[in-house]
Amino acid sequence: MITCVGVGPGDLSYITRKGAELIHSAEVVAGFDSVLNMVAPLISSSAEVFRMTYRDQVEQMARVAEAHHNGKTCVVAFMGDIHFSGFQLLERVESACGHAVETVPGISSAQVLASRARVCFDETSFITFHRRGDLEPFKRHLLSALRDGRNAIVIPHPWDFMPHAIGSHLVQNGASPEHSVEVWENLTQRQSQWQGRLDSVPDTFSDMSIMLIRHRQPSSCYQTVTMEKSTK
Ligand SMILES: C[S@@+](CC[C@H](N)C(=O)[O-])C[C@H]1O[C@@H](n2cnc3c(N)ncnc32)[C@H](O)[C@@H]1O
Image (cartoon, rainbow, N blue to C red; front, side):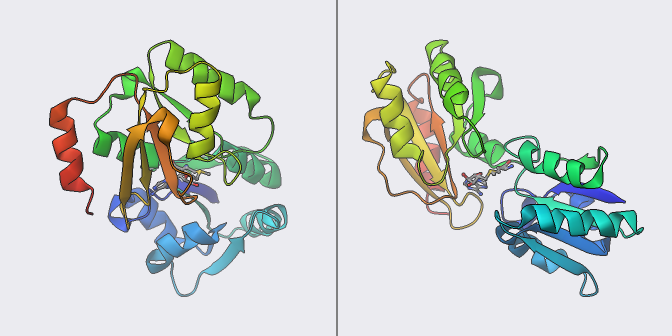
């Protein structure tokens, strides 16, 4: 049995009870280092842990698939929610197993951002550049979402299409430099936030950052809430 579990944005109080139970009872837990470190307190001391890197993920997935086919209870831990910027990894798991696997959703960094920044999902497009392959269709989609008057929640591509490069690209391709932008780092953990215009996004953010490009200026009421929260 193998299950892919979204473990939430970092702080373990955001993991679902279902996800925590699956990890705690698993005989094999696999994932990238950063994700396994988040869930380390939940992993049983008798569990086998398969740590993946971008380079060896195919080999590690083959080991997990073998354990699964040998009847072990396996969990592959995903950052945030599987359904935002997680499908390429899910496809790798399924290709190693040779069949579709069960998924358990988690709370995405996009959801925490939407809550902190008070944006409505209905008026927002979600775009990730944190993926392999051609980014051009996603760049076009982002421009057209802004043209259509939508907000955008954007996951950058480390390290060549980070928030500064995204802002410059959009302005060079016709987006208004006046869009209000927020970049949030390490949501739920050592959280910090930057707010400014599309044409002035700094190039100082880490790979644990997520970007909000607003269609409209936030209300003054929202800015008060942000200032209160920006210290945690
Ligand atoms: C491969 S994507 C996976 C996103 C994940 N599936 C989700 O739902 O949040 C990884 C990227 O998501 C963003 N991210 C994930 N957790 C974050 C957090 N707690 N704070 C800020 N950004 C985060 C970062 O840009 C990170 O490099």
